[in-house]
Structure formats: C-alpha cells, structure tokens
Length: 73
Image 1 (cartoon, rainbow, N blue to C red):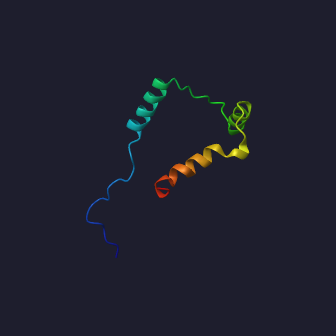
Image 2 (cartoon, rainbow, N blue to C red):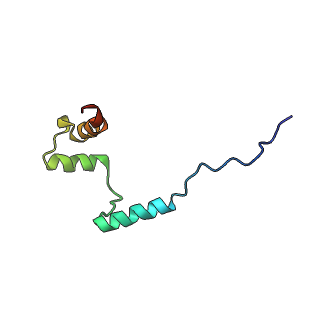
Image 3 (cartoon, rainbow, N blue to C red):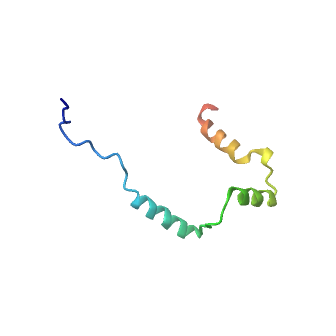
C-alpha cells in the first residue's frame, strides 16, 4: 500500500524570466550584441590575432588565482 506525502513538495524550479531580463538589460547597457555564428574556434582565432598565446593559460590561470586568493594571505 502506497502512502501519499502529507503536502505537495515545493517546486525547486526557478522562474528565470527575471534573471533573463536582468542579463538582457545589462547586455544592452554594455553594448553587447550576441553573434549567433560565434564558435570556440572563432574565439580562439580572435585571441591569437590579438597576441594571446594559448600556452600562457591566461584565463584559466586567473580563475584559479581568484579561487584560491583567500588562502594566499
């Protein structure tokens, strides 16, 4: 015999409309325009053209530094 829970479980889903609107407003204020043709390969080519070398691991190194910043003190 199956029993029913005493109340309906609360929904764990977030209404993302407010967040999506906030991000869209921020993009507009910053002048960001989405490019539907953007790919990782195009991003890599743009970075290379600007002199960013993949072996420098600039982005990941900075993320790691920020993640453990409080431990260095």
